[in-house]
Structures are given as structure tokens and as C-alpha cells.
Length: 524
Image 1: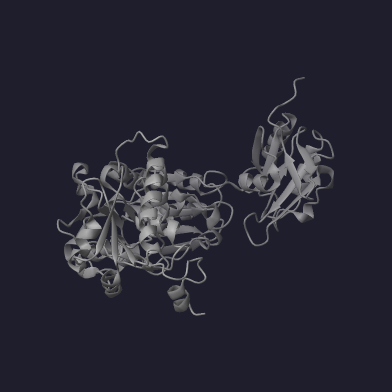
Image 2: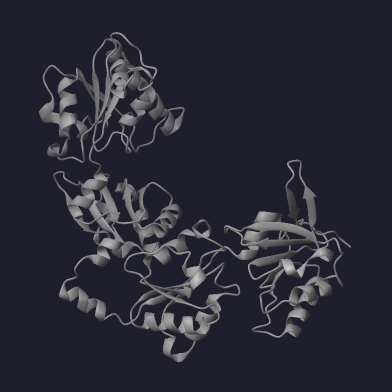
């Protein structure tokens, strides 16, 4: 049986057969009646019953859009909400009052369908996109033959009225309700390429603050009553919160489109007059995009220039219009100076670092150069990232669950004598240890020396975690006794975690091994 035959008979969706009517969810578009689809007009013409939602004042936007297509012999069902934004004394609260209303409304429509009448529930925008119809659909579509007629959304209308593309190429569009908490809005706005925030009205002050905190306010546009009477568009920053109705959205449009759009001469002059930009040092975590924080993701997307070690830059998606400045791993100071020079010329620069930029990474190099006279006035921010130690510990269990020390075994920037002294101090204090940069092609003896030193303070069976390429395609996590630690199994992509005297290692029933350090330390 074809899809169309299923729709006609209701087969395949649990619908009743015989004389029952058909349910339609009809999208009417954003407000202008001329933007209704041909199919929407046809369905309204065929329907016996026209149902629409409204507030208690009785005025229905959906009905006003479809008014010219309603006939005198249409049966109209006004589904009047018992509450909208006000409080209620319903024993189930606001949600309980609405759920009861939806159940009652669905049964009113079911009575018409059982009598063989065709019912069209009309809805502004698209019926299944934040639409009131969806509550009827959930309660009735499995009982009756049903068809949903899509409509032009307010999002599409807003973009069209602004004349600005929503997304281009690989950009990600995020649609957010303004009713989210401010912190959640801020995080999502910071991490996405483009965005639309709906349901403004009373939420507008929160949305505006979130835009500002996420650094998106200069890009944001405001659209009120798109395609309707009283339509208004403006920069979001210029809007007075006391004038914002519910039927308004804010749009952060495509950055790619904005970069490629022709600039008027005065705009080019303004850009040329910028005295300085800024440098943001971004931690990408131990591997790919899954480890990025929303703030870091947003900073990488907003940057005009990316500066970093080639391996770390390769983790960042290529974006049209961004310049990428890749270099070798051993030129930290040169990278920092390049980033600050670009910022001094008015560029927004992201210095890309692995892990957390403040732990054996690029933040120190940038701040050292930024402290010098030519660069002291350039804004520099450091954004945290998931550290290699934290990522490795999570894969193993919780070996860093109590006090621990983080030490680099690389003697490229400090003498081995200092490293040995710190290993002695941390081991004698019975701290768990996270050892970075344990070995490389040119450094092959440090791991063996560190093992020898640590065995002066730790039992031979102390758990040692070898975590390699965490989050990457060659990830491996192994636990061995300290006495059996083999230096030939350790390279620059490996991080070592050495347990304290209290660290536990257990094999669980499913065969997996977990390692953890208790949070309680025994009294002497």
C-alpha cells in the first residue's frame, strides 16, 4: 500500500476506518495571508470544521490570517487557552491547566472526526514548529487519518525581511527559545555560527544580556511581526525592552555571508581606522570538537585569524574568510608575537592551544610577550580547556580524586635536577602525579629515571596509567604496576598518572578496570 493510500485509509497509523473524518494540521505562514501555501488554501476549502487557538480575549492570529478563506457554513471551533502567562489556581499548576485544556480540546475535535467531518486545525507559521497544533497532533494523529501542511516559519520570514542569509556552507544554525535560562542562552549563542532566538516579549532583557555576554550583540538583528501589520526591524542593541511583543525574534545571521558581502566605502574606511583588535588564547582540549567548551567554540568561529601549532590548527574547521597561520611546535614566542602584531593591526586573533592553554601551553608564551611595551595595551583573554590530565583520569576512573601534582618531564625549558627535586617532593608528600611530556625521540631516559626515583617512595604495585592519544583515533588506556612501567611504551602522545599510596585498582564484573584515589585520607 502506498503512502497516499495509507493516508486515505488511515492504514499504518492506527486510524479508524469507515466514516471517520480526516484531521489536518495547516500551517498558515508568518502572518501575511499571501504567504499561505496553495495546499493550505485547498485544505481549508475542503474542511467542514476550522479549529484555531486563541487567548481568552478571543482574538486569534491564525483565524485573522485565514479569514478570507473561511465560509459561512464552516463550523468554527475556538480553542481558548485557560491561561497564557498569568498564574493559575489549577491543582496541577500552569502545566496541569494546559494539559487538561489540550485533552478537552482534542476530545472536542474527536467528536467532529467521529461524526465523519474533516477538521482543519490552522496554525500560524508551521504546525510542528513551536506550533499549538502539535498538542492536538500528539493526541489525535494515531487515532485518525492525518495530514500536516507545512507553512513558512517566522524564522524564514525574519531572514527574508532582513535580507540576510541565515546560514551558508557548513555553518550551524541554532534555534533557541528566549525562555531558556540566561547562562544556557549565553553558552549556546557563544558556541554556534548563526542563531535565531524566539519567544521574546518579557524574555527580551535576558536575551539581550545573553547576546552581550556571548559577544554576539553587534551582529544581532531584531524583527517584530515579520510580514504582518506593524512590522519593525532594527539592530538588537537599539531596541527598548519595553516595546518588545511576543511576536518578535532576534537573528544572528551568517558570518560567511557578511564577510563576502560588498562593503560600502565608508564601512571600509571604518574598518581601516580600527586601532587594535584582541587576542584570545583558546584551549581545544586533548583532541577534537567533542572536547571544546561552548565559549572556546564561539571564539574560534568569531576570529579573523587563527594562529597555532599545525596539529592543533587541524582540529579547527576551515571557515571561509579566516586566515590560518600554522607553525612548528617549538616557536611559541614567535607565534605569540605574530598574534599580537595581527591584533595591533585591528584583527581578532585566536591562538589555538591543545588541552588547557594555561598548562604547559600557549597562554604563558602569549602573556610573556603581551607584557612587553609594544603590546601592553592589546586586550588578551585566556579561555580554559579540558586538560590532558583530566581527560586521561576520566578514561581510567578517578585516579586524581584527591590531592595531586602536575609535572612535565621535559628538560627542554628547565634542568633535570629541578624535575627530580619536584618529583621527590611530590612523591614524599604522597601526592598522585600527572606527568606530562614523558618522552620523545630525543628524550628516552627520563621515564626510567622517574620510575627509579618514584620507587624510593611508592610500593612496586602502585597503579600507573598510560593514557595515549585520549579522544583520538589511536586512544589507549592501560594500567600497570609502577615496577613494570616500560619506558619504551611511552612517547610524547602519552600521559602518565602515578597513583598515591591510597589509589585503588579494581576489576569489575564486566571485565573493565577502574582506578580511583579515595577522597578520604587515613589518619596516622
